[in-house]
Amino acid sequence: MKSLVVPLATVGLIRWTCWLIRRVPGLFYRPRRTEHSATLGVVVPVYQEDPEILDVAIRSWLANDVDEVVLVIDETDEACAAVARRHPVRVIVTSVPGKRDALRRGWESCASELVALVDSDTVWAPDVGAEVRKPFADPGVGGVGTRQNVYRPRGFLHRVTDMFLDYRYFDENAAQTVCGEAVSCLSGRTAVYRRHLLLEVSAEFMNETFLGVPCVSGDDKRLTMLILERGHRTRLQRSARVWSTFPSDWRVFFRQRTRWARNTWRSDLRALSRPWLWRHPFLAFTMTDKAAGAFTLLMSPACMTWAIAEREWRFAAALGSWWWLSRAVKMIPHLRERPSSWFLIPGFVLVSFLTAVVRIYALLTIRRQRWLTRGVAVVGGETTRLQPAA
Image 1: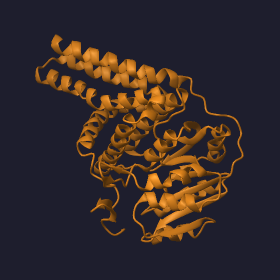
Image 2: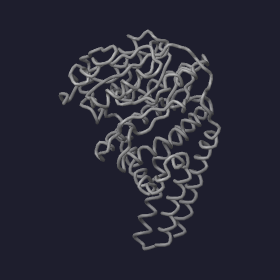
Image 3: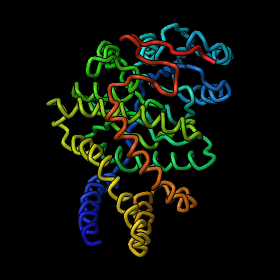
Image 4: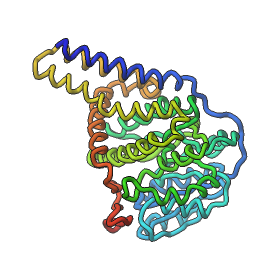
């Protein structure tokens, strides 16, 4: 058994050291408080959205201090177009499949200084418009992200997803903001940019390829990297809270995670090969740490499997208890708001192990370009609609 304990403890010590390097700076994170009066527009690609959710979301955007709301709606989505017509918003109907072209059409049609790129199922708190403006008082800030959670979480998968989100916004993104103002991904659920920067990067955004294959997803990560590459900074504004819907079906959940993982691998591997990234040493560290974590995380369940097979019950019990306790320590910000999540930690740990497998699978299939949760893919080098909208 010692042959397993020593390497497991060594890897564990390294992983905890890496986590502390991220977490300690995150403790010093504070949102920006300087008022800023720039005009703000909202751009929303809409494709097969739940009309009821879209209606709630539109009301939440309009309840904020925004100057314009532009919905770019797929021509097949009559139900959402009908919802949009009930509100004072501008509608652009598009026949081009894919989210990227819809985003580009939206920000090109805006006249505001700042543009919030928002998913069609994302609901805003009443003060988001004011909060996301504040970091832009610093002219060096090019993009701002928000704190995001699950909209009306119900069931195990929703609750676990909410835990993953809080872990991200109190750990990785908070630390990246403190250490260099270089957040690696301003999530597309709500990310705000200076419009003139979006216009500058439009061509590169629309023509992204990886190993010769056009990219159809990963738009939020791509935009963030393009902004950073040009020398601008990206920040988390955690005081701006939004909520989005997430899958409650296991199959859809893992398809979504596969898409996200492929996007992350493509973006991070490209960035790590570019000189500009090394001007942001903490960002480079977190990217490298995340890549390594996909592999080292699986060492622990492998040891548990061996312990059970060999009936080393004390070792198995000690390892299981450590999983529960160690994840609880890392989830303290979430547990403060939702103490009942303490009982979900074992499930959270198991899902973490499964997503590590997904991340490795995503690396092995990195050239595949398909949305997975939408009928859009690259076929013959072109972005194509694989099936008609329901």
